[in-house]
Length: 327
Ligand code: NAD
Image 1 (spheres, helix red, strand yellow):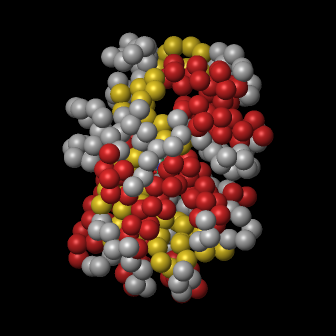
Image 2 (cartoon, helix red, strand yellow):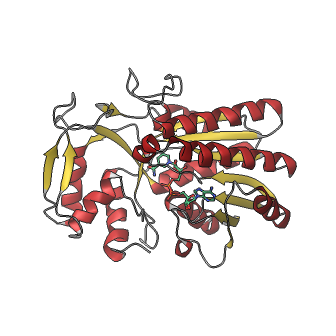
């Protein structure tokens, strides 16, 4: 039986492929390489280069892959700032892609999908930590597109015997334990890789946006989830669906927040580098704190966080210091 990984050449998808393969699953990958890297997909894995919105292409993949037991869906655009400038690009790829995928699953009788959703579906919540019952009120087209995708899956699973799990990640970071794959976004917006670019001398300094938030040291607090823990949740979610589990959503974080300055200090400790920093203006729409309540994933998927911030940055540093130019 095969797990079809959509977006398997991307940052998170490539780690899912790596772990699935190492755990004995048969794996196939679809990716259009819009933001992914062919080099991140192992040679031994069947790789179909193409766009999930291309119905003929996707049908061809499903005709060839006759034993698909489940889909892992990572293929989306995910830059918040760009989504504010080009909202239709986000609805087209994220929502349009999900439409074709769900229709193709129905036509080919594929029953299960584990889907990357995001903390961005919550917008700026009134309470912290954020649980699955916290109202979802996205404040950008990216978060809105992911919320629409969640709803499409919900209604499709109500109408048919398809089941899904939506995993709402908070801040994903880290890399494989041996550092052979990792984060290589052309347009990097995530704090940890940017800090490590400063450590590598590729940037002069890191700007921390605002130090007057209502937090422990005035800088924003975010929840970081380690890549290995994140992929473990995907595999547990797939096995849960295969065992007859009902469709559901889970918030995935470590349930512990770290301020931007705490992240910076940890990176200085791990890399042994000075990592110059400056305090900049606050960014519009940045809440004080975004921390997940992942109790439900523990109860239903039996998922537990194993790794904290230091481990995350150690693995990220292994990757970035050995691949300063990415793939
Ligand atoms: P990524 O850009 O590295 O990976 C996405 C992959 O999907 C890329 O390889 C890209 O080429 C591919 N892709 C995009 N559109 C496609 C299409 N139409 N057809 C085929 N392939 C397509 O991003 P990532 O950081 O690995 O994120 C993966 C998923 O996780 C995304 O859906 C993102 O919204 C979600 N997510 C990420 C984070 C994070 O912190 N990185 C947090 C929350 C949610």
